Length: 323
Length: 206
Ligand SMILES: Cc1cc2nc3c(=O)[nH]c(=O)nc-3n(C[C@H](O)[C@H](O)[C@H](O)COP(=O)(O)OP(=O)(O)OC[C@H]3O[C@@H](n4cnc5c(N)ncnc54)[C@H](O)[C@@H]3O)c2cc1C
Ligand code: FES
Ligand code: FES
Image (tube, rainbow over all chains, first blue to last red; front, top):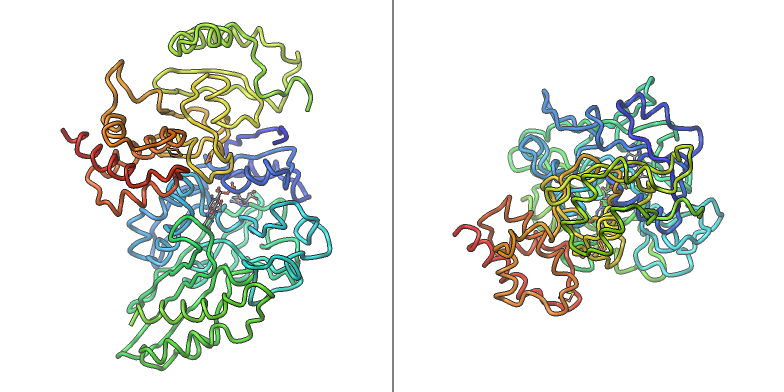
């Protein structure tokens, strides 16, 4: 790992004034579980790291009317263990608990979880692909076992975050700051498609900090679940994951939010599956139909066709567990 | 890399005391008593280098103050600067758990924590568990069950167990399995590790 200047600002504003106009030269360090690995592999060679995990302004879980506000530097273990999160948005606690290992969750922050870079092995081995400013995605014709089946191209990475699908399903909003100017963005608009920009996964400008995630309370009468399929039972990234939240009234589905992780370059909202479910009784047939609708339009690569039935079945199983 | 930015720059008195004396306590005391003077002797550039920092932290109850390159991981700091070699380097990528230590009560991967980020922290390593010659109940349990084969992962397994049992004194086996899931064992001594954890939980109540 190359050496760097380390800055430990006293306030969010101080942190923001350190940031430059270019990606990669000055970088924010939160829990470091992703960034330090990237630096050891020379994927990132920042001249300056600005530490933010200690900043009070970015810490803590504040319950409010109708939801919780979570500081971006709050560690995942605190999200998992928070009584407020468990009561108001249990889906997020379920998803955060699926991240990595206990040590990772002790170290990692929720902001870092949303801003983490893809796990594509070409990217991680420093192939000059789109993500490194090149003009090719090696996975398209290469080893693509774990790549996108939906919305792929020109880059076929999958978004690795577990909390992202849950937060999209919950309809969260992220707050972004330059130290002076603030903006709020629905989390669905936070992530970018490689068709918009194949080099990045989110809209953050180099001088912006993700400060807070506002999570509305799950609607009354709703049930939710996060299901994650991995090569092993624990400690891995998702082959596919499903964040599902279903609101029923009188036994009939009034509203459904179904968001997939690990299958597209951004958390993928399965709108057709949601539509297929609305107005139905949540039974085996309805769950199976929604599963099929979720993977409509899937275009697997040479080595990841298995993900299509896997995702279809996982959606159906997740939904059925909410019946 | 410039010469002044090596990860093991100290040729200070305290560093030599570590290497020669071997006794950890001696080195620790040397370092605590002589922070300013020892650091002043370092062969560092006269102008302060922004890529180095002075860190202060408490490790196993002993306060340390050292000047290090910013890129030094907590694991390198413990092993190379404090000669506390109980925490091991397996993967150096937050994947195996051999480097697990406890920082402010939580088990973390020291290979993926910057030492500068641990400034002000209370760090506990395997060296800090026993009281004199009396082993900690978790260490006793691992011996009783032979909760290891080669032993490379063991300090990490034990530190995770410590952080876990301090929070969940009466775990179920399933809870213990999950708590230990971030510590791999190449020898696959998992069954005996689990038995050790459950016995440690009982011993710690006694
Ligand atoms: C072994 C291992 C297993 C893992 N398993 C999983 C898993 O199962 N599921 C999962 O979702 N993830 C997993 N991860 C990935 C990831 O490291 C963590 O999920 C973590 O949440 C990242 O957060 P961090 O605070 O450590 O981020 P850092 O590493 O500090 O930062 C990551 C990136 O985000 C940027 N950043 C951080 N905070 C902010 C902010 N507030 N504003 C703007 N930019 C910011 C940083 O500059 C950096 O580019 C795993 C990682 C490892 C090493
Ligand atoms: S050496 Fe730190 S987790 Fe493997
Ligand atoms: S005892 Fe050998 S790696 Fe665990």
